[in-house]
Every structure is written in structure tokens, then in C-alpha cells.
Image 1 (cartoon, rainbow, N blue to C red):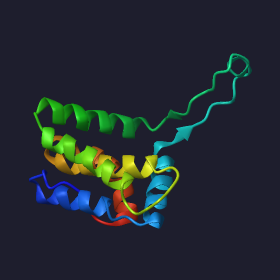
Image 2: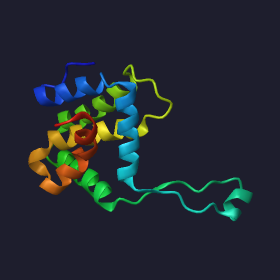
Image 3: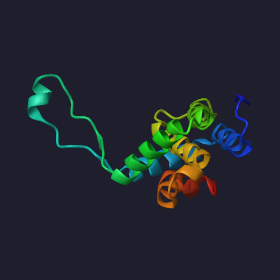
Image 4: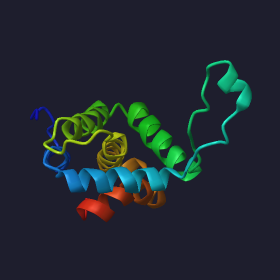
Length: 142
């Protein structure tokens, strides 16, 4: 992984994300998707006839709001390095040795934890806890 991140704590999180095992990646994925409170709506006959599909909806309003606030706060404060660190953490999972078919939840879990850690001073305790919960549950303290 790159060493462009000057914050040692964020770089350590990125490095850890790049070293996750397949079991950790699967646990992150499952836990994140459970925290998303994904709702799969009943299939729509009219959409099926038209060749469309009903998409999943994330219904965890607290998680969505915390992510949006952290991202907006980072942008407003000019905290580009923290946003880039979150992106790098997701790439680290994608390129890790943990070969899984679907790692979207694992990538999102590490992105949210890294962003929350980088902008800890800009988010509330509740938002921080929400965004780091899956990381802490699977990988331990942030």
C-alpha cells in the first residue's frame, strides 16, 4: 500500500485493512450488511415484466447520516488526506489476500472506520461509534 498518508494511525488502519484474512473479510462483510439494515423489497411484477429489478435499500438512517456528516465535515474542513485514507483503506481490502466473491461490506466497514477516525474531532461520539462499530466488532479497537 502507499505511504502517502502522513497520519500514522490512519496508515496503520490502512495497513491492517490490507492484511485482513478471508475470515475477517467475511465477518466484516456480514456485520456491515447487518448494520446497514438492508431491506430487500418484495419483487415487483411490473418491474419484472419490464426487465427491471427492485434494488436493495439501506434503511439504517443513523449509519447513512453519520457517513454523510463525516464526509461533509471532512470536505468542509479541507481534510482531503482523511478522505483519501478512507478510499485507500477500501482499496487495501480489495487487494488483500482475502479472496472473496463479494467484499463490498468489508470495504465499506473499513472505509467508514478510517474516515471516522480521521475526522474524529469533527463528528459526535454517537456518529463515531456508529461508523467504527463493525471494525471494532471484528478487528478490535480502532
